[in-house]
Length: 182
Image (cartoon, rainbow, N blue to C red; front, top):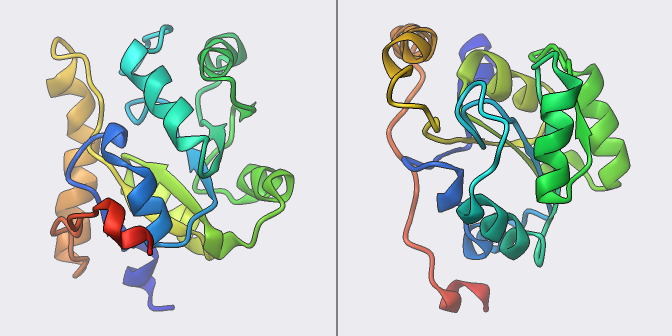
């Protein structure tokens, strides 16, 4: 793997996590999702999940298992979000470290190639997933509009630097329909 390949997501959704559908998972033969939490599922510092996210997780769980793996150090907050989604979780993961991601993979009992690491950050989520041979999905962050300027700064720098290094960040989402399931 070239050094720049470690930053390259397999799928660039061009939408929030809510844009991941059962048809997309079927198309890529994914049976598990490891989901980042902050700005992937909820805006930073938000403790409650939206009803829309709960419905999304219920639909996704029909075709794939989900785990939450967060770098956030608040077990109380991450645990509450995980409980709302009825999902197991790991907090304090220190991504791009692979250690705690391996724990989620072992619990899923699926080959890494059938599990997607889903996140909004290249230098944590994409690197960690790629280092383990997982399918990586880059989503648009869920942000609180009042905090957008501050929280986007790090992500914007990552995107700028990645492009300078030769990573293609063009949206790769395709149209998926129920007919793709056959």
